[in-house]
Amino acid sequence: MLSKSIEIPSAKFPEQVGLDSLEIEALLEDYKQSEIELHSLMLYRHGKLGFECHAAPFGRDVPHTMFSVSKSFISIAVGFAVDEGLFSLDSKVIDFFPELRPEKEDENLEAMTVRHLLTMTAGKKENYLADKSKDTWVADFINEKWDFAPGEKFSYINQNPYMCGAIIKKVTGLGVIDYLMPRLFEPLGISRPKWECDPGGQESGGWGLFISPYDLSKVALCVLNGGQYAGKQIIPADYIEQAITKQVDNSENTNADSVCGYGYYFWQNRMENTARMDGMFSQFAVFFRDYDALLVCTCSEVKEQKTRDCIFRHFPQMFIGNKRKQPEFDRELKLSLDPMPVLEAAPRSVMEQQLKGKVMQLRKNTFLNTIGFPTSMLPIAVVFMSSEKSGNINNVVLDFGENECTLAWDEGKDHNMIVCGMDGTPRRSPYHLGGMDYTAVASAAWKAENELEIWVRPLESIAERRLRFVFSGKSVTIYPESSPSSNNMGSGVSDSVSTVFPDSFEGPITSIMSNIDFILDAPIKGKIS
Image (cartoon, rainbow, N blue to C red):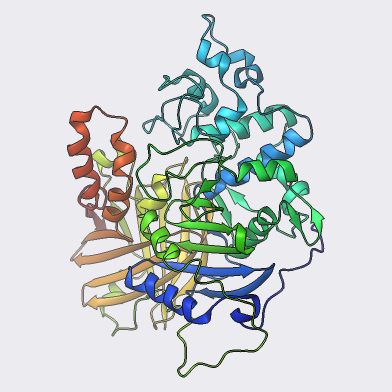
């Protein structure tokens, strides 16, 4: 049962808690000028919400994918387990999985501890090519090659937090969410969140948590306040202080806010005495400890340092002395976000009657199936991080009504049907792909007599899928793309992916990832029956 927890109080205006409205406006303009797709921004000080804005259809209570912010939740789960005496930070990882201990003693394996996992110093290589569809993630980690001896240096890999979750499950019999429900989520009044899992049902650990900006704020405020929320100690105080404090050097990294130190799945920033939860595509919770303040934002910007640069251009000058009187400005401030773009209403096509109820049978792309990225209704940025790959769109059926159309299709083992607004107002529909439930925010419009465009945004995620149907007689060609583009996503991850190949491959890998639209968003041809 959820706690009747005290909700986060709100200030009447930012200055009431010492936040500068003019600086907030400058920050929002900076996001815009930097071409950062901002979904939500929430600013807190002295335990109060001082400012928030959201780009429709996103909102404070809409679950949002958090990518590596998930790691910080794994850290909190470890903190509870250590506090309860289930294991210590110096417990040996292999001791939890004796059935996987190799016959020939491995000194590195015998030395690796929970602390090494938490500080990203475990020493194992990252295997980007591992088959995530197999229920062998723990064994794959144990058997993976060594990059260095445990504790020798920092190396950021997703398998480390996954192993922390596996240890919690081994000693408690519970998944991370089940373990955290009575300890963290219920005391904060947070409903059960979703978390992507491995094929055996264990949380992916390093990514995959879906939680709303407001619920993330509750957890982050609890962290900022030394584990307390509404006057009650929730997270063990000693542990969370260690977790957000520098535990290991990471100065071999390159970005300004990735070289300042690392705690237990919490990053240090260039601004003194600040830390952050950090997720791919710029999902952040930034702690300003000297100012008793917090910034939470969700975005769709793969170049995370660009977003961090934007944020830190406005701090600490964002903080001003507390003002109890509402300030007066000589102009109206722009303190809101424009909604996400949608397809505007357009003249309808006579082809609707010809297409209504007909089945479009589409060809599979053999190459994309071989590399594990068959064409999906989900954007490539979503497919890339999913353990259960969706793909191979087929048996597409369109139906048309007065102000909307329905799109039905098969994909893998899933059949879905969503409604698309054709009057300039998107419609919402539930659908299930890649092992996850999403809310489709969809619109459609005819661009020409034989050309229909459909935009589908998985609301809980960071990207939008756009499909352009071109009809010719009994043939159809579908031109897929994503927004942000696959190229945008590929250029952001090319450096990481190239590390698993020899140096001589770095140029080709970077070139491929920076032009990945051409590969992954190839046209799909089919017949209309």
